[in-house]
Image 1 (cartoon, rainbow, N blue to C red):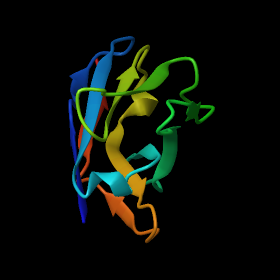
Image 2: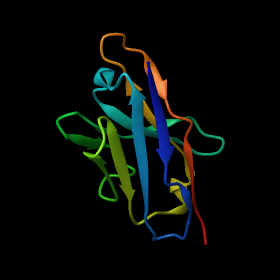
Image 3: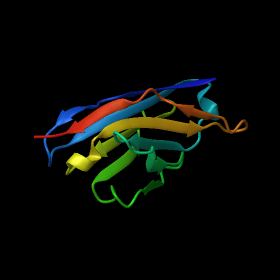
Image 4: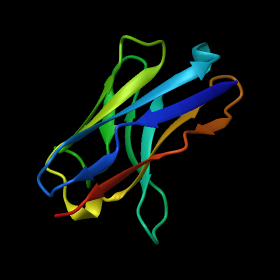
Length: 118
């Protein structure tokens, strides 16, 4: 199986930046695209960004131009989410997600909290 672990969350002022990391362990050849989701208090979980194994990235409208997802080439299956120009509406728990190749099982990390506040 595959496990996901996020890191890098924290408290940041509006206009600031954070970089989140997600690393997969276990049967990493089953990991193809990797996704970031977030869930704000009282709201549904929403998709933020996806990166394919070829490095192609797509973004939700709410973060395009401010966030950038990239491969962590130092690991077998890992990625970063660089978040710039943060606003209070970006406050959420950020989750790493993959849908496994062959089984189509959904795997989620435990999440990392991001708080944007002055």
